[in-house]
Image (cartoon, rainbow, N blue to C red; front, side, top):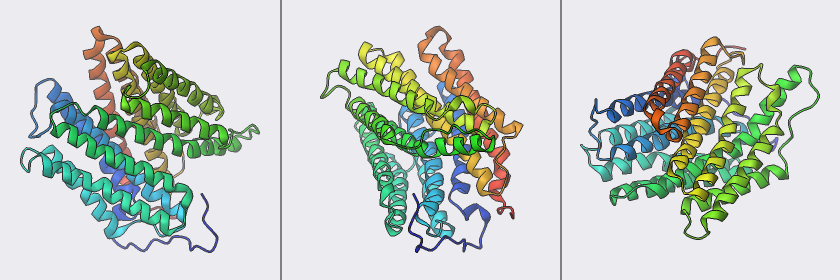
Length: 402
């Protein structure tokens, strides 16, 4: 991911509030607050204790705002921060970052009060944000001639298309099954692509600091096979048996689960338990394999409860845990703090892992589902609100001097 030496290294020129000096700051902080808020509202709505002025069916609104509202935020914060290192261009900061963040906020307000402006305008404002992110990220990667990462722009574009498909399905009065699956698939592929770079790299740094000599396997052809098999399985999962028989689709998904698990074992996850900041990355990636395995079983056996468990393994488990893992590590590193997990950080990690485990288990154990779903909601809120409280002050303050 290194750019030619002739390209100038980035410099910070923003003189305004520290919050808009780097992409990770506003999107990590307010994304985490939004994740906690949306789960709290859904918890109350689901139990009939609250109504929200929305033009969406409640379940569609819940999924929409966790996928296109929350998940989009840390992805944007991470990419806006990472592409500066990929391209050696100045970081996206200042007024451009403020405008992007304003689009995200406008979309969230429009959706959550969509009964007022109406469904078309609300969804149009919501979709405007990922369109803008594709344009900005694409411009930076092309300007930096960082052709290797154009695939990231492609996955962001696929996520944006899934947003439009989801909105159209809801507008037509149907279940947004295709749009939601497209969104999950595009984010999952982006996660497996980026994780294949950062997880073995951070693991190697940890192992080297401990004096170990056996390092994680470097990115190789095997990783491309794993990502490719996952992409094939997810595409077939999205179209839901239109082209290929369910038995073949399920077998491909199960095979991809095994390939992803072997990929992770090549990264030596068992050697990282002493460092929560590294171990949680492996914990998050494990949910990728779990989701593929459950999805494969669900397709083969036609079990809707298992399918819901698979979806939550990916969304709550992989997406929720990986975003928190990256948010905590990036917040520490980019604000000049030591890469060391505090007791609060450990509680945050344990909370999101509890949320994932109980939410996956809820549809598999119907008698316990209400209790498990409640525990999952409370644990999710604790994790993301905990991040905002513990890391908010450092995101609002200037970077510490070296």
